Length: 416
Image (cartoon, rainbow, N blue to C red; front, top):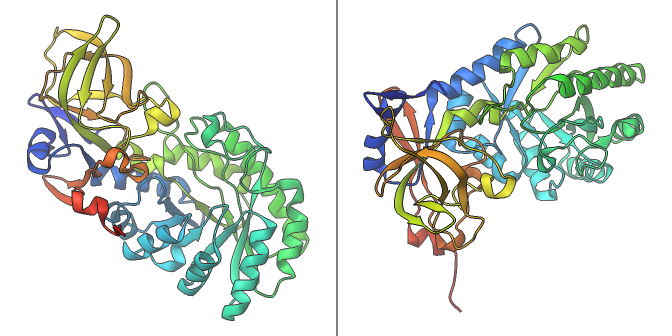
């Protein structure tokens, strides 16, 4: 995370001191680096430069308008999975013809909204969805541009909760059933068959599984074209992982180049849907130590960020590095602690049995690699207002989402 470095003993995001930022905006707060976002995005572009392509940033990783607008201005499209994400993408300035709509449970109204917006592509995940999309399109007097998400039954070698390409997954259509599904799609007046799509999982740390799936997808494209389908878009999905601790994933550029090998000669436009690999290491969660507590069995550092702010450790057992904002001096005491939040759950932890420089009450800590699946999965559990979000650009910063207030917690509620 080159955008987060120590300068004169204090952790900075680009040219902004996180200690100064904490005083200005409070804690907990998510802090994102604009430079890191753009470098990761352009790495994907470089990897795909030999073919017609579109990098569709996956809003489910981080849907903040400031983040999405930064990427849209650089030329990115958007991968969405809900009507709300469609609204966010359009509000952030993503052109509709750069938006692709994925997800297993699109509602009739969401399909209608996306058709009216004239988006680039619907990634359809079941025959039931295919038939509903055809019906809605015909009601509107339009044709929906369609790709079927095919399930190549490839093990992505990742956490089971984020593996999506196996035969047992709820996602996609089994690849052996795809020819018949495409035949049905082509026969429906409200649909225009234009592509194929896959997405085998998230936090992939080597290209092998995705490359295997891409080869199967290329063979399917050849089969579909032979059957008369004009396939011009090939969507390889997303899922490239980042380094949280000791992982060694390929760079986006190297990963993209590897996946292009099976597609040589197809002449199709290649779509990708990266999320985590763009925003994950572009963000941190800034938090302040409230208390220290020791029992006969444990030492605890209690901070003002909690599982409602960052649920990944509790949900996935995920590891996030934690760094003191004030750099520890050489030889400073180190202790094994649980870093926990105020939420009334034993599962409310950011780290367990972690060796950290001793943190005192009032000290600031940065939870690293928190740009993806951080704020976007946050909640108001225990009636906790959600954190502020800040986008740093060089020596300047913008509060791109203000901290929620207690009034925000009850907005929309009525006492009968």
